[in-house]
Length: 159
Image 1 (cartoon, helix red, strand yellow):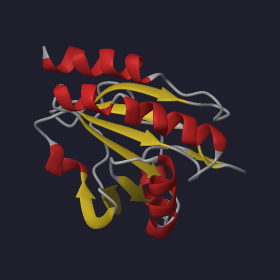
Image 2 (tube, one colour):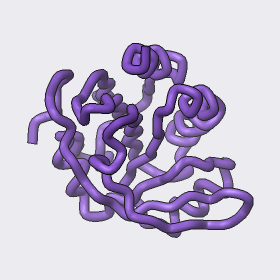
Image 3 (tube, helix red, strand yellow):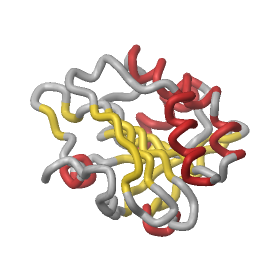
Image 4 (cartoon, one colour):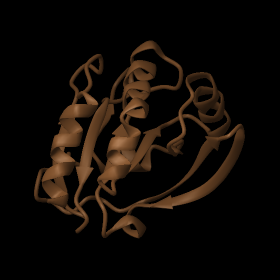
């Protein structure tokens, strides 16, 4: 599948995910279309507890209150299973949902598959209408957009 462009409807999906808050793991199903009405930040990352992924998701965690203040939801998406996500969340103090795309269906739907690394590190801002409003798709996967950059994109949707 091609990578969705700004202005395209975001491919809908449902994935299992989990959060760790106050030391308690909670598993749930996460459906993108269920979030329509508020902005959603989808952060696709190649692997749990790797140096760049840890830096990326920890930076988003630090800004999470800002995203919440804007009414935005933040989800991390990667191919690892929920138990791996739990260890990563606990080790990095992540409290936002980490979704498990073990079959790669969502990665393919967003056109993010990459030989060797599995997926391209990418961030999509989905508008309250379910349309892609901003995206950053990495070529190699070592760089990621700063939380402040994403926040500015979300702010344009809630003004």
